[in-house]
Length: 119
Image (tube, rainbow, N blue to C red; front, side):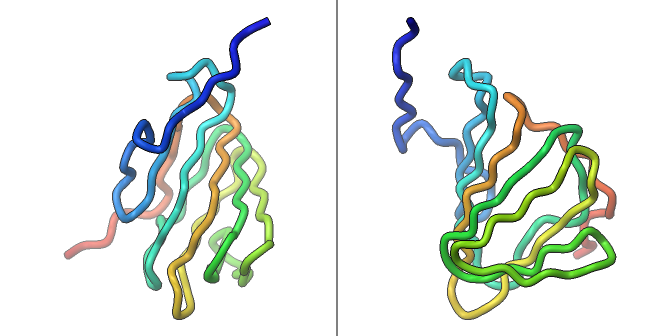
């Protein structure tokens, strides 16, 4: 039997904006997580992963899109994108979006499908 692994809050890696992530391979885990705490108007541009991804919305609201259709989600909603599906989301509403993003992979792998915004 292996030991239960505890990943303490100070071990999470800042992921830009006020979000944190942990890649599972660092701890021998098959999943990678992001804890999102994102102000309104922010979110990743259209992209895909070669693995499944799930989001659990805890607070705030977001518009999720596959590049064509937009779905509004809020607290308690769970979103699932199968491997290879294009997706993006934008935090909406008056309070920050708080979500747990679950990447079904021990490491991040992202293909960006939209160019970064020009400043």
